Image (tube, rainbow, N blue to C red; front, top):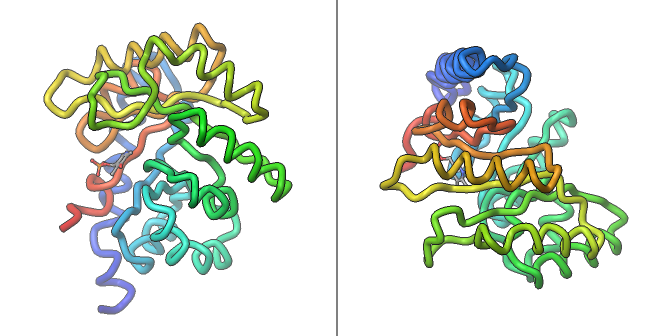
Length: 226
Ligand SMILES: *Cc1c(COP(=O)(O)O)cnc(C)c1O
């Protein structure tokens, strides 16, 4: 597959997604610059990611440390301006790699991880902003702190030395996501947090309407992950 085939459709889809974000922001009385598009490149090969970079995309999300370690050092060397977010669950034994590889960790979800990350950042002399993942739907199989535990957890993470910049959530698949986005926005507001990472391919416009500052979009840009 040559470079051109590898990137087929990516620039067009990116433009469509950017247009839809801008329109949703406009309907909500917000400027298009109020929302950052995080292009979710999990399972996407580097040549296809290059097509997105060539089309002006700068912020990417990966959900697995191991995959990021394999793909991103080379991409980052070629494109030092990129920003990489960790959006998937993080095991404490991968915390050192995560601090090394990512510019934002969106999936802080428990105290033990907060302690390990704080110690690792201190050790590496690298302060990586974090978002607290909230399990707004209280789904047993899903990561994230429960909504009622969020305020105390945010405060504790701050005491441990982490720079908590915002919140992230993944609403239940089968529910209207808007109330979940609104719940996340309320928690951010009362804790004085500026970043709201919410909304994926199927619901990013609803998320923007509820105040998302970051939307994490994969399949709508890169196509379906087989
Ligand atoms: C995969 C993933 C996304 C992107 O999902 P799409 O439906 O492909 O847009 C967003 N957030 C998280 C946490 C993910 O794991």
